[in-house]
Image (cartoon, rainbow, N blue to C red; front, side, top):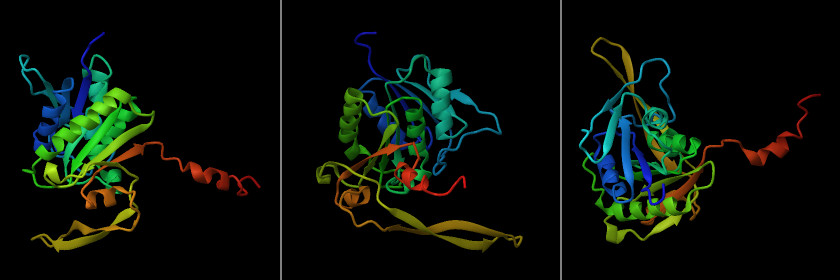
Length: 259
């Protein structure tokens, strides 16, 4: 329909009541018609998990008189997107935004992120998608400095679209708006977690473990997301969900596979 407002699907991994999601709702309401489908409890670090061995539930939490339609979902962030697209929405969204995550999803964290997996799932469905994260794990983090930038980034994607198979991973430094230097298009830094497990015992004598560890950036490049965030920029990394290592196909074809 001509002059129809964009339809924007909003989700996250911190849960439907998370302040970061509420901040994202307030920004997206300025850009289009929005619908929220988010987990009913925190689903951080779920990656691209889906629910296959138990039932899924949707609970409409908005009233019919509310301007914004909202649902909570018993499943993962990816489940939320799948259910939204296949069971709730009457047409394909013009944009899916996920977040604002409480904590960074830069570098290797994108692999584990439920926030980004929801965006990736939307991309698989052919929907332009963005994952937003703030480098602050505090539940009461200040999301105000991100809002004008989120509006700008989302508006650019609505206007220009994204290439097939590509979604955006956007991370914000924990700064006041005046101290953010701008937006940088980056590559994912080569970094990893050096895991450690804190081994303890229950009162009954059973061993249990808490995952701990240290994030180590092994990348000295100045074109990475880690560099941008360290130098007070917002990092925007185009992420593709085709995991094929295209650059090594030619080399592998020289091996003696069939001899």
